Amino acid sequence: MSAHELHLLSRAKMFNGHQEQYRCFSETCQTDMTFGIYLPPQVLKGYPAPVLYFLSGLHGDGSELIRQTGIQRFAAQWNIIVVFPDTSPRDSHISDSANEFIGQGAGFYVDAAEQPWAAHYQMYSHISRELPDWVERHFPATQERSIAGFSMGGHGALSIALKNPSRYVAVSAFAPLCHPTASRGGKQAFAAYLGAESEAWQAYDSASLVQTTSRKLPILIDQGSIDPLFPDELQPEAFVNAARANGFNVQYKVRPGYGHDYFFIASFIDSHIEFHAEALGL
Image (cartoon, rainbow, N blue to C red):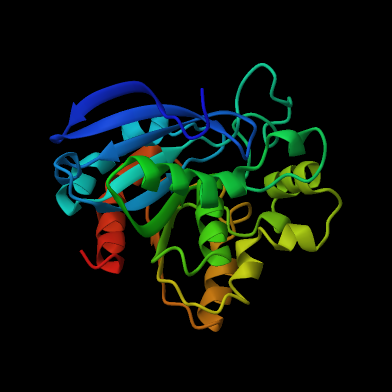
């Protein structure tokens, strides 16, 4: 497959748009990467639309967001393209680990600097630069972007937006891992991918990044009150307090009785799409 050539894997009609899945060779990750994309009805008619990147949590590959959140109904209503990336490179030749926080399905949206991970685990660059280039090259997409995520994907969405505030109009997250350098999973992943604790860790820690980012993106965070990872592992309050102290407009809502699952996301996905639509000027 030549560089930048997309290979269509599947297509289904949904809310008069198309839910599609593609594979493309990644120069960044040096292997084939897959992504899902929802194209609203207006886009199928050739009218360009902005793009929302929705990042999956630990061991997700995007398919769970596609199948279990109901996001397409609202993306069709607001005419927003939604892209669902994988969480890591995957194949028999890609390094893996028995540790649940490291390896295939657990890329943590960083550019790995340590071997054997550095050869393929360049997920930050893939999501922030390479994938948008593919989308804007092959689909009727504007260069207006927004980003969202769940759990580990919430960490990815927040950190990528804060590191590239001029490229995203807003960021939202469900139960995000907000302070990975102070969490069990984050520490293990960062040690493997980035090496001994250093400034490199802080460069992917949203609770640190939000203290220095100059452009104040709008932020929406939903958190379930009975999430077993809340508050110790996820630590949203550490992030929210730091963000508000630095002048960010953060909408933070703890939802009573909700857990760490796709039922939670499906219950509030409409408000997240409306949040992004408003930021995009739709």
